[in-house]
Image (tube, rainbow, N blue to C red; front, side, top):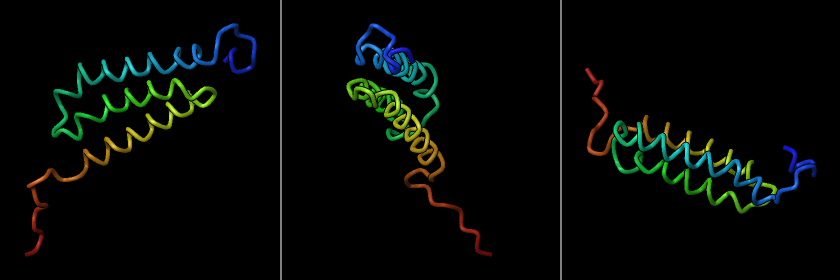
Length: 98
């Protein structure tokens, strides 16, 4: 916050990294402890590691880094929910006729 209003004596890159790098570490830790054991399929498995990588890439977007990281995280939630609600490959939906 102080960097945004010009009162901090750190660079924009350092301020961005102070937000994005712990976020990426959290996402990878969450994947390592929980998601990799409970998600089915490679697509579901790759959501959190891919999100962590994209959040790290957001570090270099100067003043837009934190906003971009938030958008990436929101999109990953949407992707994860979409993948979780679609039927698995090879499993057809039950026939409700009759």
